[in-house]
Length: 136
Figure 1 (cartoon, rainbow, N blue to C red):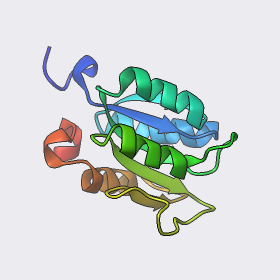
Figure 2: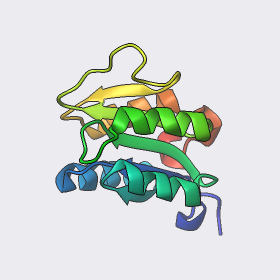
Figure 3: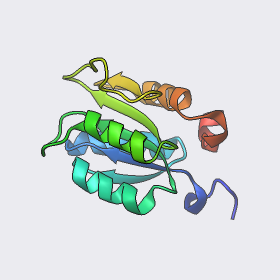
């Protein structure tokens, strides 16, 4: 098994309550070399991170989702509990205010393209943690 085989690929968690955007972001990140986990709300996302935080390298989250917590809350909690996880936040309705994003996180407006997502992942994730496909 090579380092870049599916089982050894770095993991990303995509969190969005819109099924089409969830599928699109998942597809983009899988094409970039990630093994993707998915959630549609903050609470299930935190459960996934509790179980898989050692494997997850990237959180890609929407802002507005059902429930009492939003994507900014998830980004901050992730950064506090698992600082090794890079964070990209995306929204078509909300721009971050001061203090919304943890240090090192990046923000993408929706709609987004595969090129924009890959660019932000390259910028957010240290070079040595890029999947092979992102190094090209």
